[in-house]
Image 1 (cartoon, rainbow, N blue to C red):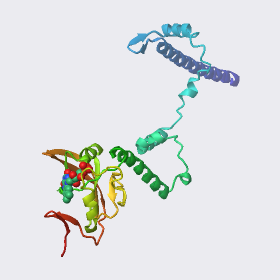
Image 2 (cartoon, protein in one colour; image 1 turned 180 degrees about the horizontal axis):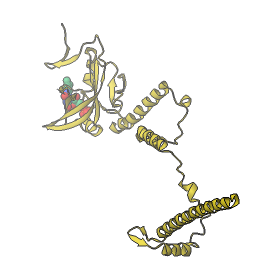
Image 3 (cartoon, rainbow, N blue to C red; image 1 turned 180 degrees about the vertical axis):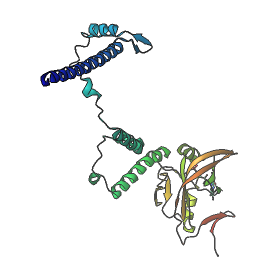
Image 4 (cartoon, rainbow, N blue to C red; image 1 turned 30 degrees about the vertical axis):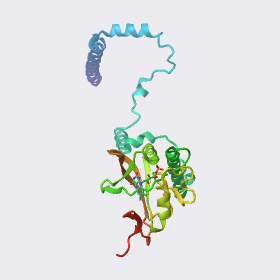
Length: 280
Ligand SMILES: Cc1cc2nc3c(=O)[nH]c(=O)nc-3n(C[C@H](O)[C@H](O)[C@H](O)COP(=O)(O)O)c2cc1C
Protein backbone atom coordinates (compact mmCIF):
# COMPACT_ATOMS: atom_id res chain seq x y z
CA UNK A 1 0.00 0.00 0.00
CA UNK A 2 2.72 2.42 1.04
CA UNK A 3 4.82 1.57 -2.01
CA UNK A 4 1.89 2.19 -4.36
CA UNK A 5 1.19 5.58 -2.76
CA UNK A 6 4.86 6.65 -3.06
CA UNK A 7 4.94 5.69 -6.73
CA UNK A 8 1.78 7.63 -7.37
CA UNK A 9 3.29 10.73 -5.71
CA UNK A 10 6.48 10.35 -7.74
CA UNK A 11 4.47 10.12 -10.97
CA UNK A 12 2.56 13.27 -9.97
CA UNK A 13 5.84 15.12 -9.29
CA UNK A 14 7.31 14.00 -12.60
CA UNK A 15 4.13 15.10 -14.42
CA UNK A 16 4.43 18.54 -12.82
CA UNK A 17 8.11 18.74 -13.72
CA UNK A 18 7.35 17.74 -17.32
CA UNK A 19 4.69 20.47 -17.49
CA UNK A 20 7.23 23.01 -16.19
CA UNK A 21 9.79 21.93 -18.77
CA UNK A 22 7.19 22.14 -21.55
CA UNK A 23 6.36 25.70 -20.46
CA UNK A 24 10.07 26.62 -20.45
CA UNK A 25 10.54 25.10 -23.90
CA UNK A 26 7.52 27.08 -25.15
CA UNK A 27 9.02 30.28 -23.69
CA UNK A 28 12.40 29.58 -25.31
CA UNK A 29 10.62 28.85 -28.61
CA UNK A 30 8.79 32.17 -28.38
CA UNK A 31 12.07 34.01 -27.61
CA UNK A 32 13.81 32.34 -30.57
CA UNK A 33 10.88 33.29 -32.78
CA UNK A 34 11.18 36.90 -31.54
CA UNK A 35 14.91 37.00 -32.23
CA UNK A 36 14.43 35.44 -35.66
CA UNK A 37 11.73 37.97 -36.49
CA UNK A 38 13.99 40.78 -35.34
CA UNK A 39 17.03 39.45 -37.18
CA UNK A 40 15.14 38.86 -40.39
CA UNK A 41 13.21 42.13 -40.46
CA UNK A 42 14.53 44.74 -42.94
CA UNK A 43 16.81 47.40 -41.39
CA UNK A 44 16.47 51.05 -42.30
CA UNK A 45 19.80 52.41 -43.55
CA UNK A 46 19.58 56.02 -44.51
CA UNK A 47 16.29 56.27 -46.32
CA UNK A 48 16.22 52.62 -47.44
CA UNK A 49 14.95 49.40 -45.84
CA UNK A 50 17.52 46.61 -46.41
CA UNK A 51 16.97 42.92 -45.71
CA UNK A 52 19.40 41.41 -43.18
CA UNK A 53 20.36 38.69 -45.65
CA UNK A 54 21.31 41.35 -48.14
CA UNK A 55 23.37 43.15 -45.49
CA UNK A 56 25.16 39.92 -44.55
CA UNK A 57 25.98 39.31 -48.22
CA UNK A 58 27.43 42.81 -48.55
CA UNK A 59 29.56 42.42 -45.44
CA UNK A 60 30.98 39.13 -46.70
CA UNK A 61 31.65 40.58 -50.14
CA UNK A 62 33.35 43.65 -48.67
CA UNK A 63 35.39 41.75 -46.12
CA UNK A 64 38.47 41.56 -48.36
CA UNK A 65 38.35 45.29 -49.01
CA UNK A 66 38.98 46.07 -45.37
CA UNK A 67 41.66 43.49 -44.84
CA UNK A 68 44.19 46.21 -44.04
CA UNK A 69 42.34 47.05 -40.85
CA UNK A 70 44.56 45.18 -38.43
CA UNK A 71 42.76 46.02 -35.24
CA UNK A 72 40.23 43.42 -34.30
CA UNK A 73 36.75 44.78 -33.95
CA UNK A 74 35.58 44.46 -30.43
CA UNK A 75 32.14 45.97 -30.29
CA UNK A 76 31.75 45.47 -26.61
CA UNK A 77 34.90 47.27 -25.45
CA UNK A 78 34.30 49.98 -28.04
CA UNK A 79 30.86 50.56 -26.71
CA UNK A 80 32.10 51.15 -23.18
CA UNK A 81 32.01 54.96 -22.75
CA UNK A 82 35.40 56.43 -21.92
CA UNK A 83 33.83 59.29 -19.95
CA UNK A 84 30.93 59.40 -17.59
CA UNK A 85 28.15 61.93 -18.10
CA UNK A 86 29.56 63.90 -15.17
CA UNK A 87 33.05 63.86 -16.80
CA UNK A 88 31.62 65.18 -20.06
CA UNK A 89 29.70 67.94 -18.28
CA UNK A 90 32.84 68.93 -16.34
CA UNK A 91 34.89 68.98 -19.55
CA UNK A 92 32.31 71.13 -21.30
CA UNK A 93 32.24 73.61 -18.41
CA UNK A 94 36.04 73.76 -18.36
CA UNK A 95 36.09 74.38 -22.09
CA UNK A 96 33.56 77.22 -21.81
CA UNK A 97 35.57 78.74 -18.94
CA UNK A 98 38.74 78.62 -21.04
CA UNK A 99 37.06 80.35 -23.98
CA UNK A 100 39.57 81.83 -26.43
CA UNK A 101 42.45 80.75 -24.15
CA UNK A 102 41.81 77.21 -25.39
CA UNK A 103 44.14 78.13 -28.27
CA UNK A 104 47.02 78.15 -25.76
CA UNK A 105 46.34 74.57 -24.71
CA UNK A 106 49.55 72.67 -25.18
CA UNK A 107 51.62 75.82 -25.72
CA UNK A 108 54.80 75.82 -23.69
CA UNK A 109 55.10 79.13 -21.86
CA UNK A 110 58.55 80.43 -21.00
CA UNK A 111 59.65 80.35 -17.42
CA UNK A 112 58.78 83.72 -15.83
CA UNK A 113 62.30 83.79 -14.38
CA UNK A 114 63.85 84.05 -17.85
CA UNK A 115 61.57 86.91 -19.01
CA UNK A 116 63.14 90.39 -19.16
CA UNK A 117 62.42 92.57 -16.15
CA UNK A 118 60.48 95.84 -16.23
CA UNK A 119 63.59 98.02 -16.70
CA UNK A 120 64.81 95.95 -19.66
CA UNK A 121 61.37 96.14 -21.29
CA UNK A 122 61.29 99.90 -20.80
CA UNK A 123 64.76 100.23 -22.39
CA UNK A 124 63.59 98.08 -25.31
CA UNK A 125 60.50 100.25 -25.70
CA UNK A 126 62.65 103.39 -25.83
CA UNK A 127 64.91 101.77 -28.44
CA UNK A 128 61.93 100.86 -30.59
CA UNK A 129 60.44 104.35 -30.33
CA UNK A 130 63.78 105.89 -31.25
CA UNK A 131 64.21 103.54 -34.21
CA UNK A 132 60.70 104.35 -35.37
CA UNK A 133 61.40 108.06 -35.15
CA UNK A 134 64.84 108.12 -36.69
CA UNK A 135 63.79 107.12 -40.25
CA UNK A 136 61.15 109.91 -40.19
CA UNK A 137 63.76 112.24 -38.89
CA UNK A 138 66.20 111.44 -41.71
CA UNK A 139 63.40 111.60 -44.27
CA UNK A 140 62.63 115.11 -43.15
CA UNK A 141 66.16 116.26 -43.84
CA UNK A 142 67.04 117.81 -47.18
CA UNK A 143 70.65 117.34 -48.11
CA UNK A 144 71.24 115.64 -44.76
CA UNK A 145 70.36 118.63 -42.56
CA UNK A 146 67.56 119.56 -40.18
CA UNK A 147 65.19 122.32 -41.15
CA UNK A 148 64.16 125.16 -38.88
CA UNK A 149 62.61 128.56 -39.41
CA UNK A 150 61.54 131.54 -37.29
CA UNK A 151 57.77 131.83 -37.20
CA UNK A 152 55.38 134.23 -35.51
CA UNK A 153 52.28 133.07 -37.35
CA UNK A 154 51.53 130.38 -34.81
CA UNK A 155 48.20 129.88 -33.04
CA UNK A 156 46.19 127.44 -31.04
CA UNK A 157 43.28 125.90 -32.99
CA UNK A 158 41.49 123.25 -30.93
CA UNK A 159 41.58 121.88 -27.41
CA UNK A 160 39.92 118.53 -28.10
CA UNK A 161 41.60 117.18 -30.10
CA UNK A 162 44.55 119.38 -29.35
CA UNK A 163 45.54 121.17 -32.54
CA UNK A 164 47.70 124.14 -33.41
CA UNK A 165 48.62 125.89 -36.65
CA UNK A 166 51.39 127.86 -38.18
CA UNK A 167 51.66 129.61 -41.55
CA UNK A 168 54.57 128.81 -43.84
CA UNK A 169 55.43 130.96 -46.81
CA UNK A 170 55.19 128.81 -49.92
CA UNK A 171 58.58 129.94 -51.21
CA UNK A 172 60.37 129.15 -47.93
CA UNK A 173 62.55 126.05 -48.09
CA UNK A 174 61.01 125.03 -44.79
CA UNK A 175 57.58 124.93 -46.46
CA UNK A 176 58.17 121.85 -48.63
CA UNK A 177 60.39 120.18 -46.05
CA UNK A 178 57.77 120.36 -43.31
CA UNK A 179 54.96 119.22 -45.61
CA UNK A 180 57.07 116.26 -46.76
CA UNK A 181 57.90 115.28 -43.20
CA UNK A 182 54.40 115.49 -41.75
CA UNK A 183 56.01 115.77 -38.30
CA UNK A 184 57.31 118.96 -36.74
CA UNK A 185 58.08 120.68 -33.47
CA UNK A 186 57.59 124.21 -32.19
CA UNK A 187 60.23 125.58 -29.79
CA UNK A 188 59.09 128.71 -27.92
CA UNK A 189 62.11 131.02 -27.74
CA UNK A 190 63.06 132.95 -24.63
CA UNK A 191 64.16 136.57 -24.47
CA UNK A 192 67.82 135.58 -24.78
CA UNK A 193 67.28 133.81 -28.10
CA UNK A 194 67.02 136.86 -30.34
CA UNK A 195 70.20 135.86 -32.18
CA UNK A 196 68.73 132.45 -32.97
CA UNK A 197 65.46 134.04 -34.15
CA UNK A 198 67.33 136.40 -36.46
CA UNK A 199 69.49 133.59 -37.80
CA UNK A 200 66.59 131.27 -38.53
CA UNK A 201 64.77 134.15 -40.25
CA UNK A 202 67.69 134.91 -42.55
CA UNK A 203 66.71 134.07 -46.09
CA UNK A 204 69.27 132.08 -48.02
CA UNK A 205 71.30 131.05 -44.95
CA UNK A 206 73.10 127.80 -45.66
CA UNK A 207 70.84 124.91 -44.70
CA UNK A 208 73.76 122.68 -43.91
CA UNK A 209 74.78 123.32 -40.33
CA UNK A 210 72.13 125.99 -39.74
CA UNK A 211 71.62 124.59 -36.23
CA UNK A 212 75.34 124.16 -35.52
CA UNK A 213 76.19 126.04 -32.36
CA UNK A 214 72.53 126.02 -31.27
CA UNK A 215 71.95 123.43 -28.55
CA UNK A 216 69.23 121.12 -29.78
CA UNK A 217 68.06 117.50 -29.73
CA UNK A 218 65.50 115.35 -31.56
CA UNK A 219 62.00 115.65 -30.08
CA UNK A 220 61.01 112.34 -28.46
CA UNK A 221 57.74 112.06 -30.39
CA UNK A 222 58.71 113.39 -33.81
CA UNK A 223 62.48 113.43 -34.06
CA UNK A 224 62.18 117.05 -35.23
CA UNK A 225 64.89 119.35 -33.86
CA UNK A 226 63.96 120.92 -30.54
CA UNK A 227 65.98 123.72 -28.92
CA UNK A 228 67.45 122.79 -25.52
CA UNK A 229 66.77 126.30 -24.15
CA UNK A 230 63.19 126.50 -25.39
CA UNK A 231 60.64 127.84 -22.91
CA UNK A 232 58.23 125.18 -24.12
CA UNK A 233 58.02 122.59 -26.88
CA UNK A 234 55.01 121.31 -28.80
CA UNK A 235 55.43 118.32 -31.13
CA UNK A 236 52.90 117.80 -33.89
CA UNK A 237 51.74 115.62 -36.75
CA UNK A 238 50.24 117.49 -39.72
CA UNK A 239 46.49 116.87 -40.02
CA UNK A 240 45.58 119.46 -42.66
CA UNK A 241 47.19 121.97 -44.99
CA UNK A 242 45.01 124.86 -46.18
CA UNK A 243 45.76 127.35 -48.90
CA UNK A 244 46.35 130.75 -47.34
CA UNK A 245 47.47 132.77 -50.34
CA UNK A 246 51.26 133.00 -50.52
CA UNK A 247 51.36 131.00 -47.27
CA UNK A 248 50.06 127.57 -46.42
CA UNK A 249 48.15 127.14 -43.18
CA UNK A 250 49.55 123.98 -41.61
CA UNK A 251 47.35 122.43 -38.93
CA UNK A 252 48.89 119.81 -36.67
CA UNK A 253 47.68 117.45 -33.98
CA UNK A 254 49.70 117.84 -30.78
CA UNK A 255 51.42 114.52 -30.07
CA UNK A 256 53.90 115.70 -27.46
CA UNK A 257 54.41 118.59 -25.08
CA UNK A 258 57.54 119.27 -23.02
CA UNK A 259 57.20 120.71 -19.54
CA UNK A 260 57.54 124.53 -19.83
CA UNK A 261 60.87 125.80 -18.52
CA UNK A 262 60.02 127.90 -15.47
CA UNK A 263 61.41 131.39 -14.95
CA UNK A 264 62.13 132.38 -18.54
CA UNK A 265 60.40 135.16 -20.45
CA UNK A 266 59.26 134.76 -24.07
CA UNK A 267 60.77 136.46 -27.06
CA UNK A 268 58.16 138.39 -28.99
CA UNK A 269 58.33 140.40 -32.22
CA UNK A 270 56.29 143.58 -32.15
CA UNK A 271 56.58 146.87 -33.97
CA UNK A 272 59.52 145.63 -36.04
CA UNK A 273 61.56 144.81 -32.94
CA UNK A 274 62.31 141.84 -30.77
CA UNK A 275 61.07 142.38 -27.22
CA UNK A 276 59.89 140.46 -24.23
CA UNK A 277 56.92 140.64 -21.91
CA UNK A 278 57.52 142.48 -18.66
CA UNK A 279 55.43 142.91 -15.55
CA UNK A 280 52.72 140.60 -14.19
C1 LIG B 1 59.87 137.87 -36.68
C2 LIG B 1 59.71 137.01 -37.90
C3 LIG B 1 58.59 136.18 -38.01
C4 LIG B 1 58.40 135.39 -39.13
N1 LIG B 1 57.28 134.59 -39.22
C5 LIG B 1 57.12 133.84 -40.30
C6 LIG B 1 55.98 133.03 -40.39
O1 LIG B 1 55.12 133.00 -39.52
N2 LIG B 1 55.85 132.20 -41.49
C7 LIG B 1 56.78 132.22 -42.48
O2 LIG B 1 56.63 131.50 -43.46
N3 LIG B 1 57.87 132.99 -42.42
C8 LIG B 1 58.07 133.79 -41.36
N4 LIG B 1 59.17 134.57 -41.27
C9 LIG B 1 60.15 134.53 -42.35
C10 LIG B 1 61.02 133.29 -42.28
O3 LIG B 1 61.57 133.14 -41.04
C11 LIG B 1 62.12 133.41 -43.32
O4 LIG B 1 61.57 133.63 -44.59
C12 LIG B 1 63.02 132.21 -43.35
O5 LIG B 1 64.30 132.59 -43.76
C13 LIG B 1 62.55 131.16 -44.32
O6 LIG B 1 63.40 130.08 -44.17
P1 LIG B 1 63.84 129.05 -45.31
O7 LIG B 1 63.52 129.62 -46.65
O8 LIG B 1 65.28 128.91 -45.05
O9 LIG B 1 63.09 127.83 -45.01
C14 LIG B 1 59.36 135.40 -40.17
C15 LIG B 1 60.49 136.22 -40.04
C16 LIG B 1 60.67 137.01 -38.92
C17 LIG B 1 61.86 137.88 -38.79
